[in-house]
Figure 1 (cartoon, rainbow, N blue to C red):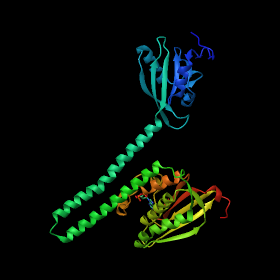
Figure 2 (figure 1 turned 45 degrees about the vertical axis):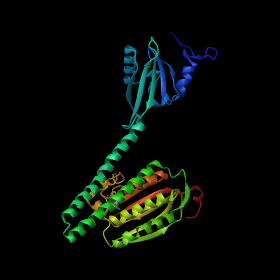
Figure 3 (figure 1 turned 30 degrees about the vertical axis):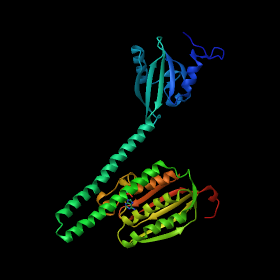
Figure 4 (figure 1 turned 135 degrees about the vertical axis):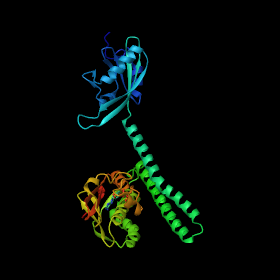
Length: 354
Ligand code: ADP
């Protein structure tokens, strides 16, 4: 049987009723109608993005096998197809496929949806929940043990004071951890550019440095604001302050006492660059590309001592990316580190003198 292109008189398109075509075109998923010989009678507009059809032939052996099973058994079958994302790189794309028999002559309907993104988000979420649970267990376990220790030492006031003080520290750590988890999940679900406001970079830097004044004084570290070139960026002021503050806190935490942390802001073309430089312990080159991962710490024991959660830099990275910017790091062990937050300068501000 040969099918002809549609004519408006008979409302038939390649032998398929217009109503069916309209229905298929309006579905969220992509669709294909095939007859034996794998001749394509209909394909929805988006199907070409999957690269499943070349020269009007189906290229996926897995899909062809699924179609054969459906014809043989005359019942609906569902499966998953894994396709390469492109000619290079190992990126895969996972498609959910359902194949239904439409008539006794072997005509089948193939429905395809790309579930890769949904699966990726699911995996990230599962990972995050597993990490969070693991991170919460440590301070909660410590609180349990310390309370037992207090009960056991109730007649020794000195010991009670010692354990209670440690309990306070653990509770503080737990509060910080929970706050950072909340910050991070807020960042992941919000887009600062949707309620974008003009933000003055020097104001962000001053505020972030002010917030770090206390902890730096305690460690005898001097915070020096160097050259600040004025720039305006578009975004969320609070998020930007948090990002710069995290970088300053890290610079303080990972530096020996009585060293210097300096903060400068420069305009580099249409990018504002906020750089925080310390004379601290530095980071090995092999670790540099991992430090922005959630919960990653080069030295978990040291990070715990400083109250680190391993979330600070992933928050910075998120803020930077959400603002259309980025964060870069230069570091050398035993010499120090420079973290640079790069943010696009607001267009109205681009022409102004630097
Ligand atoms: P943390 O809460 O542990 O500080 P971050 O995400 O802020 O977590 O940083 C991740 C890790 O990167 C830290 O545990 C530390 O090992 C390393 N790091 C971050 N900033 C610095 C710095 N300025 N100097 C040296 N190491 C740093």
